[in-house]
View 1: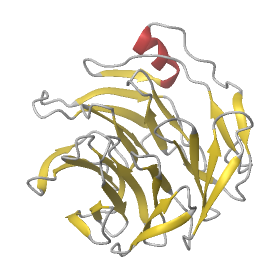
View 2: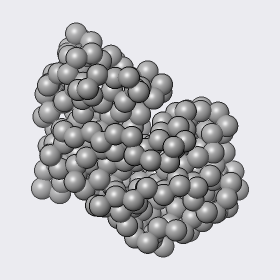
View 3: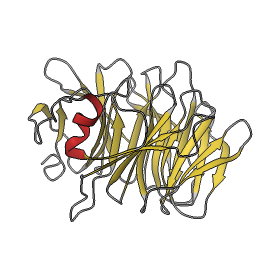
Length: 293
């Protein structure tokens, strides 16, 4: 168990494209639904086991070129790992005063941005292994951060227990936009074009904000409990969300989408006693969706 043993494992994944009308499927049938292929094994062995963190690992992200992996941990560090040869850890990023809950690579692959319950975000220089900027405007825990994967993008969005989502130009310390909500904001996603941000909060609603207009443009309802994670696809057309109601949902977030924006509901994964089935992710071309702890 990678979580209990404070270890990080890379697992192989199956291929499967999923889109179309709203569907309700179980997690065990998801591969069959999206591709017609046989479902993946329930417990595939890891390709490589990475050991180095002293406490629980909360997030892992591949670099844009796929040659490195960043892992964020309760031990207040981010470790960078090679994805070839012995998959050794080659950089440790240390500076947060509390756990590191989320990490993202900037599009150039030279910098990373992290979120922490110490109420801050930090921008890191990967090659120099040091923090180059600290963002301190949030008044409570920062749960999540996201950036656009497009070349040259400099914007990031953060989600916080203080009931706000903030947008940052990572070249400066002050936020460029703040969106206030009635409940804690637990998840966020930046549209690839940097024109929209999506937030997920404690009330289970997903909200989309127009960055050009600086206002809320839609609220999407369907989840029955707090949103824990979300991610847009590479084109920014679909949003994947995971929630404490033990469902994984796909939303059509295009401007002229049908009124019913939820196109798929996947059920079957469970949170268990620790309620830690928190993360979700698309594969590169939206051929697969996954959730995990």
